[in-house]
Amino acid sequence: MTKGEKPKRPRRSFGYVRELSSGKFQASYIGRNGVRHPAPATFKSARDADRWLNKVEADLSSGAWQDEAIGKIPFRQYAEDYLNENEEIGERWAETCRRNMRLHMVDILDIPLRSITPPVVRKWYSKARKGKGGRTSIAQSYRFLRAVMNAAVRDEAIVKNPCQIPGAGADKATERPIATPDQVQQLIDAITPRYRAAVAVAAWCTLRRGEVCGLRTADIDTEHQEVWVRKNWVELLESPKKFEKEPKTQAGKREISVPPHVWPLLTAHADEFAGPEFFFIGKDGNRMRGNAVYQAFVRARKKVGLTLTFHDLRHTGQSLAAASGASTVDLMKRAGHSTAVAAQRYIHAVEGRDKEVAKALSDIAANGSAARLPRTIKID
Image 1 (cartoon, rainbow, N blue to C red):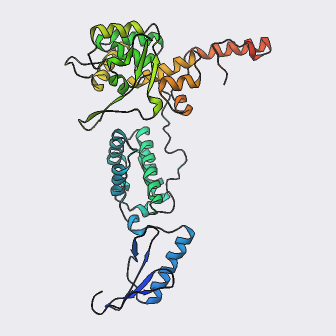
Image 2: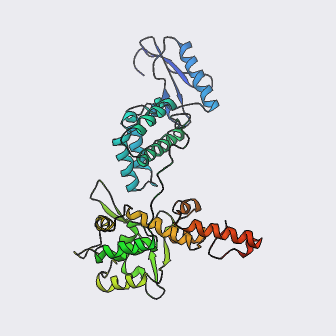
């Protein structure tokens, strides 16, 4: 306490007011987080300071209290802290979020958290949708904004999340293309021999590219003709950093039965190309890079005349498995999904299957009972 200041005087059971040497009054209180919070400005009279404390006390009682210090933090800074401190966020997703902030969220980066209101969010989202960014990137950006603002609510920087646009975070991409079995074989024939088995396990065993590159030679079970997925290989897009990580969920660790017609491809690869540690290796003998697989795939799809991505092979495998009569549980196991919702995203209509369904419906009508439905058609 400096010379001329009067000591703090307790104000009933909540807050403190003290007179400064300038003749003005300062108010403060202890928040629920145990930290002292001073008023953002001084007051001309003790009565004005009391009124401010009364409002704070009412807000605390009603749940409308906000930590003004955190509320003043710009979104950019708070979002960076969120990415750095949240242990559940993987490096690949953090990289994606930072990229989206740089490309699609510039208009809100320097706005204080408490100033990001529903109208601000709607204006930003509308502008972003009209910009050059893809729908998937904008949906990712919105989901990230919503997650950060949820954290701000938990930190009591704001009372309510301003992200209130229905469906804005949903990725409403157009139906992904899937390949027919003949097209998968054409891709296998067209690609450089070193990568043929990679295309086969992606399409028929529903492996992600990172899971393909993560396979070790010991993960190929020749006795049971199974592939074991234990690790995922991650290569960041904007950084040279590469690392091996555990699957996102326990369901991601799985054994997958290899279709009999695919097994000869794996054994041929094991004899000619596999390394002592990693099943897929480059010419230099090191683990195969994901980008190398993708570039070889791009060249092959161009020869065949297709536009699908490498990840679409995974969609192809799930859709063909569903068409074969696999249950949702079967599909979850093969793809390593922990929820039925995730598995359903990978099921697409197989060309010609609808005619089979229509014929099966006629069979039901003719027989008068669903009990005689052909076994290859599954009713949910």
